Image (tube, rainbow, N blue to C red; front, side, top):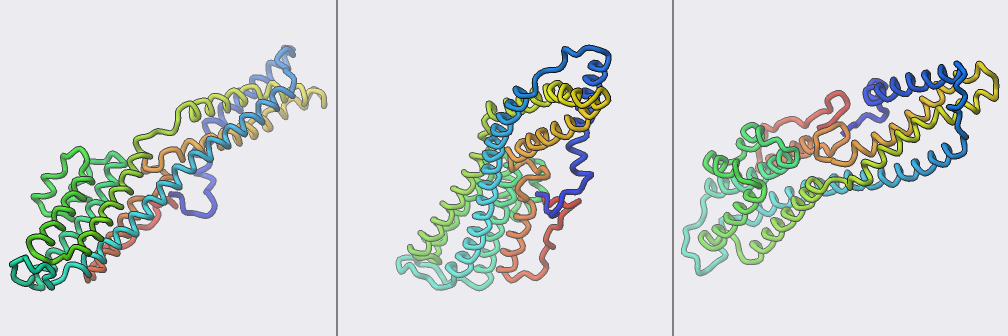
Length: 321
């Protein structure tokens, strides 16, 4: 996610230079051909202007839909932050040494046992966040570096090659809750239900992210937006050259800067929509899931009482990943 208030010119140029170069050369060739006497290139301006209005409405419709996908993705990850904190609080405050189940014959849990259980469950939540991020970005090769450190070695090896590791991590959380309630008596029914509801909400948030990831932006909108922008841009100098020619024979060269400027504006609007279609691709304008996962890790580990915490991630070249 680009975080600087104003986009630097070198970033704008990075996205614009190819189209600007093409439209400059194309407009120059149109003007040169017209100057050599091929005045049949001149077409009326009115249909070109009408096409431009239609294309602008179409691009606006597409960009609204693309932004909705980005904003929904950001809201889903905001929910992941909130429910991760809720899960950690429930783990620390519900799982205590008090045995609430009278039919469970188990010795009271020691402080060390509780600490181990708390850490395992909370760390598994951190692992789930990172695993979901890697699944959305199609980066399974980073499992050893960014997920395995938060899991026990046996569990990490067992889950890493599953088709959907995040879902199995939540499944393991539910299995641990069952053991805590039925075998250890460290959760009563009310607490167990509340924590299962938190897991259900985490499943819903994961499903929402997977829905965006696995359902591409409708190609009929994305593709024809691209076609219409280029069609308008190619016709633009043909419509402008006659208008400038009426001002004088030397004014036809003004077609180049004006057609390039208008074409760049339309092409930029198309690029803005295109780069917002898939918010989980680890690109410049996507949801900063890595930074969000680091924030979750810091918050949850601090709730466990840890003091040696990793630093928050800072933007790299004004981009927060």
